[in-house]
Image (cartoon, rainbow, N blue to C red; front, side, top):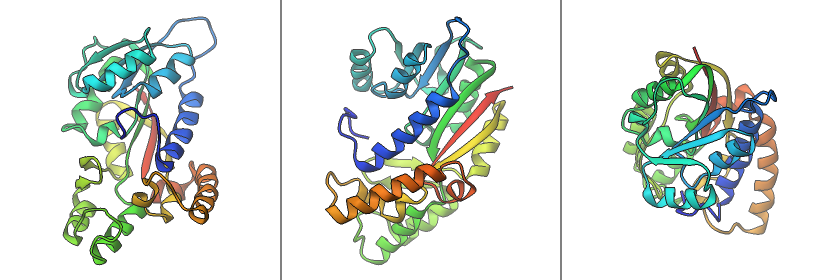
Length: 261
């Protein structure tokens, strides 16, 4: 993602619009006057941390990037931010009431099971996690295959062998602009969560129909007028379908609300 996150491409703009609506709805704390703590795991420049603060949480955040943490500290001077890995969170057990792990952070860690285990460890019993990560079987995978057949006309940088490997193993060897990235099926994600002691309660799918336009096209800074009009219509449909079975099957990103046992 862009280092400053200040100018989001249309693809990311839609992702975060819907994701943040889900976060503010599902992680809103009870209005009982009690001060609660929340963790933004993989906080980047602090998008989710800022929302958690607006909801009334005392916010903590971790990220491996010192540069991104510097931007987050400028945005959120009152948040307690630390440079740390998701696999070794620097907190005692059961200290958080809620956690968010977004920006496909889980798709970049070396040990997803270990990271989820750590998130479960630092949540109190009954604490909630909102997780967003890359979904393996999505419309963009078809575009990547089509691009490979057309001498990479769409700029995915993948061969047909790469696409087959991704469908089998769930790892993009060189995702455009990012490098190595892991994707998950819904069944795999649910199994990882349950093994960590986190019970999935609800799942949404984002970019389920917007990827009728290839994501490499949507990542471009400017869309032509006809394509921009089509994308606006697809965004509205995608938002309406986010909680549907169709979206959970074809989405580029899965968003899961899970609760600590």
